[in-house]
Image 1: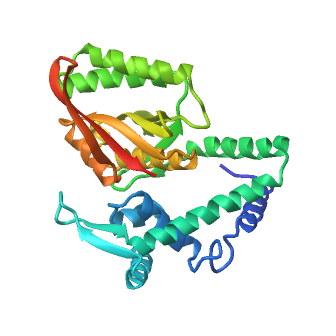
Image 2: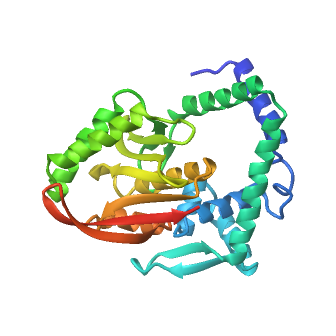
Amino acid sequence: MSIPSREIALVRAFNRDYTRRIGVLGEALLESPYSLTEARVIYEIAQRPEVTARELAADLDLDRGYLSRILKRFTQQKLLMQSTSAEDGRRRNLTLTAAGKRSFAQLDRRSRQQVADMLSGLDSTRRQAVLTGMQSVQRALEGTGRTEPGGSAEVVYRAHRPGDMGWVVQRHGELYFQEYGWDETFEALVAEIASEFIRRLDADRERCWIAEKDGRRVGCIFLVAGEAGAAKLRLLLVEPEARGLGIGRRLIAECVEFARAAHYSRVVLWTQESLAAARHLYSQASFHRTAAEPHRSFGHDLVGETWERTL
């Protein structure tokens, strides 16, 4: 399809103006010693403490040699360390040191302040126009998708829309029956959670993400308000044919990032001891088990677990 020159010029003009406003054109970002790419690498490692260099290169679309030089420099500066995964001896996980975490905290604080300063100069009408416009652009571009590591087709992550809740309930009921033998009372619980989410949705502090591949729903996750300043992660699901593409990890990362932006103090979740794959993903995302209790639910004797991550 041929795009008119005027439309291309408008997009380029917007890009030039916005990049100038948020200060990404200088040699350093946010008055730090880091370039935009370096700051993004620090940010991603902070969000995903068990990510590998290969996964980072794929997710950020970086040349692996270029990324290797950045990681080597960070290691020399004692911002970064690498460790062998306890689950897979072939994995070398990247983790920020205490100094690296301080650098990330400083970048994150300055970034928040920069956005606050930019918005504070607008009255409520203009500020809402800016935020609505940004959301419109993001939603419109969500359909363009992105390719996850190891995937042969684009995986698109989008907000929920009519029809999604029915799919969430149906697929949870079917998959947990097929894979774990759970009865219809689990499907009823999922239906209650989905119904409450729609009825009480606070769009500024709660969200559902739907993952699509080849135009088909292949995953979901929810983040809702909890108690005492906590957010609750709920209803993580990835279709069997889409597992191994990093979708579950990406969905959890989206939840954590959104929760931090919404100023929650922590994210909590409830899972079962028998759900090994999900528990592994939560552990990779720096969640820790804080409680466990046997119970009888969904036609089985289970051990329910509470996991938590401080933000």
